[in-house]
Image 1 (tube, one colour):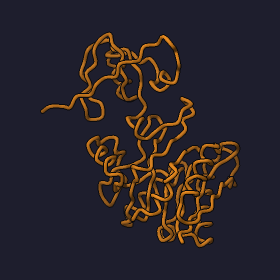
Image 2 (cartoon, one colour):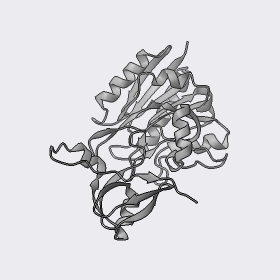
Image 3 (cartoon, rainbow, N blue to C red):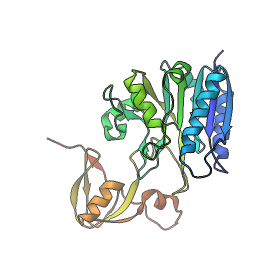
Image 4 (tube, rainbow, N blue to C red):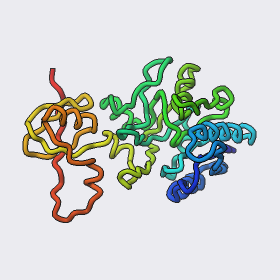
Length: 288
C-alpha cells in the first residue's frame, strides 16, 4: 500500500487552519496511508532564511528514514483540493506539482515551461496558447517549480538533495527543479490540482486560474492607445477604466497613457454599494 509523508514547514503562528483542514481531507480521500508532519524546525532563530534549507533537509531525512514511498510538500498557507494527494500520487511521473500562484511582485503561475535539459523555463502565463492547452489537458510537462504543493518519489529524494539557504538561493525549489532537469527527471504539473494560496496583501485566497494573469492594476485611461500585454494587443480608450498587468500598467503610466488607481484585487475586495464595476480592457489577437 502507498505510504506518503506529508510535510508542512512553518513557524510561530503562521500555520493556517484552512491548510490543515484541506490536507486532512486530502489524506482521508487517499487510497493509501499518509502521515502529516507539521514542522517547526527552525534551528537558526526567527527570520533567518537558513531555516528554509534546514526544514527541507529534515523533510528529506524523515521521508527516507521512515521508509515512505514519496514526500508530499504542502506550504502552510495553501488550500489543496480533496483529490490532490490521490491525483498526484497516481500520476506517472517522479515529480508532480499542484499549481498555484506565486505572490512576489506579481501573481505568477507556478507551472514553468519546459524548454530544454539545461535551465528552468518561465511561467506558462507567458505562453497563452500553451497554457490554455495545459488547462484543457490537465497534465503537462514542466521544468518546475515551487514547493507549495509538490509530490516527490523516493528514488528522486535519494538522487537529488535540497540545496539553498544562501543569500542568493534562499529557497530550494528552483535549484531542485534545475537539478531534476539536468538529471533528466520528468516533472509534471497537474493543472487539475489547483491550489489556493493566501495573499496577505489583499486578504484573499488566490486561485491559479482565476487570477493567473498576474497581479492586475486598475487604471484610469488618459489617452487612447494600443498596448502589448503578455503577447496580446490591448485597446485602451480615453476616459474609461481598465485592468492591466502590473508591469504593463506602470510602464503605461510612465508614458502618460494611464494613471494607476490601485490594485484591482483590492478594489474588488471592497464592497461599496454604489461602485460601478471597472470595465476590463478586452484583448484582441495581434494581426500580422
